[in-house]
Structures are given as structure tokens and as C-alpha cells.
Image 1 (cartoon, helix red, strand yellow):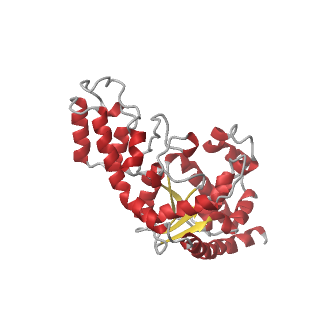
Image 2: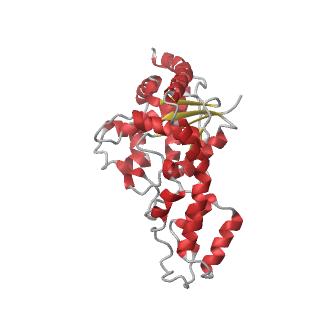
Image 3: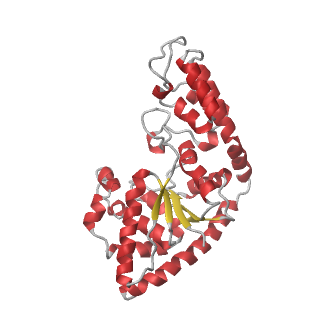
Length: 325
């Protein structure tokens, strides 16, 4: 049998190029090798909010962009977390065996404790994430390094469930570290994030939309004039973007022309902007075409709900007797 993957994205805003190069490209590849469950993590999106809004428009746009990027609903199960009630029941069952000390030691809670003002929902985030993973008996979970502790904690809970059941009813999921590099925001100081207002939205990556943004971003501070030699490694935005979309030969050309002051920074910006726009042109075209199919998203999510519910209920059927239910 194919190994199974569970992964998701929180609907906190429209997708940006960081999502594409950091996640979606990898998903498109993985769905060729694994049985994939891709989740709109809308419950997770609520755990660190102070106010709430209708998430449907955001969710619709995200699913369309997934499809435009190459996620195939015929190969992968695409579903909305909050439509599968088994996640909530599993979180409750896990809370009966979870240790508060373990939850407090998870880095994401320690880093965000002040921000979320001790909200219980965020404190229990790792339990819900474990429920997401284990509900589908996932073998591997594609994550960045910062999310590895969450997968490891899901393993801890799975081991305890297996111990109580006196047999292995849950697999021990493994993290699958993504190879994609962190995409810097257009401020050059942090990773790209909607909350930091430093993103390039996926649907707005034409050359006409990109140039007003990228033409103004900082480059190597040592290049005061065009004749000053530069160091691409000290270019905080344009060179990392070039590495995402350009071939080895093109990267070598950039390095040579920068170090030898053959190109000015604007020359490099123009080439990288055009290459980025060209790379994402098929996605933009797919997105524009799919937007015309008004009911498509909800049809796909409904089909995904049915498939996801079946698998999650199988896990609950194994879990309930352990607790005398």
C-alpha cells in the first residue's frame, strides 16, 4: 500500500509565493508518490485570533490556488478540517492522556505564550494537530524544522494509545523535512508572512505587478553605484528569489556580473522579476480559468469531506473502546 501523508495550510489570508515555493511545489511532487490528504486547517486558524470573520472567501481562493498549482483532487483528498468532527473528538480523547508539562515544552507555545494571552485553544494546539495527523493514520508529515516537535508529540501520543490498547492501532508518524528554502519577505529581514505585510501574493505575480515591488527592495549595501562590485550572498531578497526560479547557469551569470560590476542592481532585478513572472504564469492562467467555475471549490471540498470522514471514523472506531466508550 502507498504510504499516507497529511498536511495542511491555515486560512489566515491569501497565499503568497512563500507558500508556493515552500509548500505547494512539494505537495505536487508528493501526490505522485504518496496517498495525500491536504487539509484547510480552519480550526487552527482560530486558535491565535482575537476577532473572527467569515473564512469562506479565503478558503475558496486558497483551494483555487492549490488547484492552479497542480494539486489534483483525483489523486489527493482535499478537505476542510472543521467539517470532520472526528478531529474534535480525537483531540478530547488525547487530552485525557496528555501531560501539561509536555505541552508547555513545545517551542511554538513558549514562543507565542504572550501573544495569545494564555488562550486554552492555542495551548491545546498540539493535541489538535496530533488528531489531524493520527486521524488519517498518516505515515509521514511534510513540515519545516519548526514543526518537527509537533510531529514528535503526535508520536508520543500514538505510543501511549498503543500501550493502552496493548497492540499497535496507530502508526508512529515521521516528519518529512521539506527541501525548500525559507522565502524572505520583501522587507528582506524576515520570512514572508501575511501578518508582517511583506508578501507577494500568488495571484499577483505578473511582471507588471512584481516590478513596482521588486524594483524598490534593498540589495547589497556595498553597491552604492553601478560600478561598485557586489556580493550576491549579501543581497537579502533578489538573489534568494533568483535561486528559486533560475538554473545553475543563470545563477552563475548573476554572480559573475554582480561581483565584476557588469550589471547594476536594477539589471539583476529586471531579469529576476521577469523569470519569476514567467515561472508562475501557468499558475496565474490556471487560476483565472478556474475562477469562472463558481461551484468547483465546494464540490471538491464536499467530495473530500466524504472521503476524509470515512478514514477518520475508522480511527475513532479503534480509539473509543480504549476509553470504555
